[in-house]
Length: 417
Image (cartoon, rainbow, N blue to C red; front, side, top):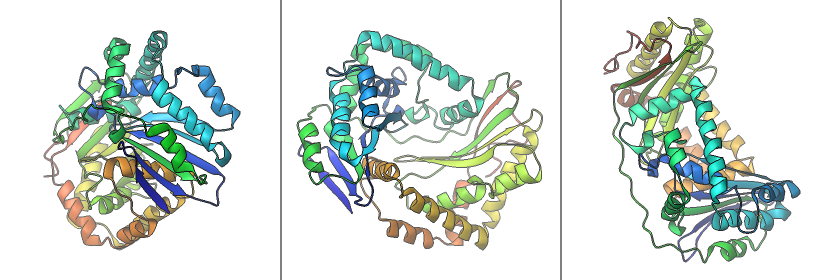
C-alpha cells in the first residue's frame, strides 16, 4: 500500500510498505536539474549533487562513505534534466542510520572551498570523458539542437568554463533557490519500521524556505541539424522528433510504438539495419518524456560512407509505420514486454522507490500496477497508428558526429511531412 503525507512545511513523503523483504530504499528527490538553470549556470545542479558527498559539519567525505560501508549499504546520487536524487539502500534495521546520513548531507554539507576546487577538476574530467565517447555525446548534441534556446536542451554536466567559474556563493545561492520544502519529495520503499513517518518528520519538519520556485516555460521543437567533425571510427547519427509528455495519456501507446520500432532486439530498426543488412552494431530508438514535453530519437553508429543508406532506411521504417501502422502480433508482443518490464521492476525496492519519487515530483499522482496493466491492455492498433501519424508527420532534427561532418543526402528535415 502506498502512503502519501505532506508535512506542514510542504515536504511530500510517499512510501510503500513491503513487509516480506529485508531491505529499505530511500531517496531525496529535488526538483532541480538542467532545465532549471540559466546558460551561465548550466551544470550547477550536477555540481551541487557532487558537493553533498564532500563533507558535512559532522562527517568528512571519507566518513560519509565509510558510514554506509559499515552497515553494508549503498548510497549514490544522480542529476537529470528535471531532478536531482540522493538515494540509499540498506537492510531494514539500518533505516534510521541511512536517514540520518542522508539528512546530514542534505542540510549540513559545508561546501568547503578546497573541496569545490577539487570537484571542479573531477567534473571537467567527466565532461572530457563524454567528449571522448561519441555514442554518448551525440545525444547531448541532439537535445541541444532539437530543444534549442531552452534549458532542457542544455547538457546536464555543463561546460568546462561554467564548471571552472562556480564558487561557493553561487552554489549556495542556487541550492537555496531550489532545495526548498515544496520542491522536495522523500520516497521510501521496503520493510519500513512502524515509526518511519515520525523519523522522517524529526529531520525534515523544521525545513523552511521563503524563496519561490521559478516556473520554466515549455520548449518548442527546432527542426535543425548539428554536426561535429571528430576523428572517430564510426559515423554516429541521431534523428529527433517531438515526443509526448509524462502527463500525456498518449504516452502508453507511444511507449509501445517505441518498443516496436527500436526498443529491443526484435524491433524493426534492429532487425532491418543490423540483422538483415549488417550496417550497424548499435541501432535503437528511445523516448525521453519530461513534465510538459518529450523527445523521440533514433540512434545508429555505422561505418563511414554507410550513413546515407542507414539514414534512408530509418526514415523508410518511420514512414512505413506512419502509413501502415503496426501488426497485431507486434502490438501483442510489445504489450507483454511492457507488462513484464513493469512487473519485474516492482520486485526491486530501489525501483519501487524510484517510481514513487519520480511520479510524485513530476506528476503528483500514482497508478497501481493493475491500473497501469489495464491501460496497456486497452491500447488498440488504431491508438498506435494515430500517434505514429501525428509524431512521424513532422520535420526532423538531426545530430551527426564524423570526421567529415557531412550531412547524408538521404536526410531531409521535411522528409516525413
